[in-house]
Length: 345
Image (cartoon, rainbow, N blue to C red; front, side, top):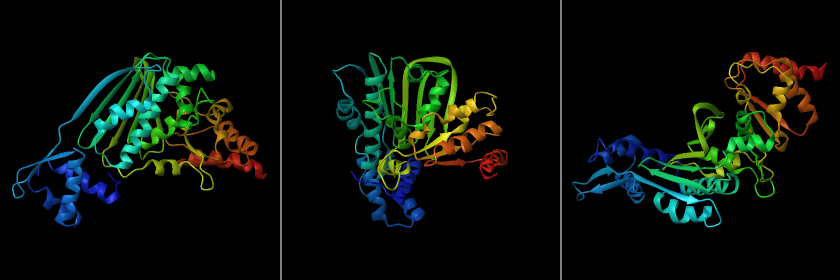
């Protein structure tokens, strides 16, 4: 196995996207598209064959390439001392994923073990169902436990008003209900590593899509008992675990020091962000970080008290922290500047 360059990722993705319609001419198409030699294309094709992404049939001159059939698997495991996350990974998930590149396997190793360990240690459930689906382009793993439900547990342990507050706290990172044994970083970093990451519990969902700053909260009419975690990633991504860790760690020390807080998660329905109590909900636990980026995407306006509490009162109490507003429209930007101006008068 090996790691993937950006150009290699694009080349192999082109092969996967076009091989079905061009089983005999895909090599020539790829040569023309990327201005590379047949030898280079054949190396990419061989890697995809090793990954079981495509299959080759026929002799050299009449060789044809096809997408590999889908791999699907499902099993149930007890959530007790008879099973551990490393065994689930080593004996079940890793062999089914096959010969994926090192960087992709590193992401899967981190995500699967973190999520299954959370189910063992925190869910209070008796069983977890694990599902895996691998296609030629992507792989998906789903872990479903029959426990209390992650949002309900966070709400109870932190004495929050409702389960939606739990999603906001989860989005910040460094959240754990067992600080002696867990850092609270696993879910946060997992959500940033995968192309798509979602947690469903009760009638609330938390989701993050790679390449987007913000997280998403949704509500469903159907109640989901326990917790379901869905992870998906491209089999040929060039992303690495190191890139994700580096993005949220400081330059001078290896620690989880940066976070992005989606401000819109503080809103419910048509609520306006106007009060100091709403601001304090947003600010809960962020003093654990050195740099906090407040993402105001989809926030149309904020009130004077809300802006003052965040950008003047809290900032003055925590002079060593860097508070960065992002994606602010003119209305929000004006209210933040107004709050900051009070310290200058």
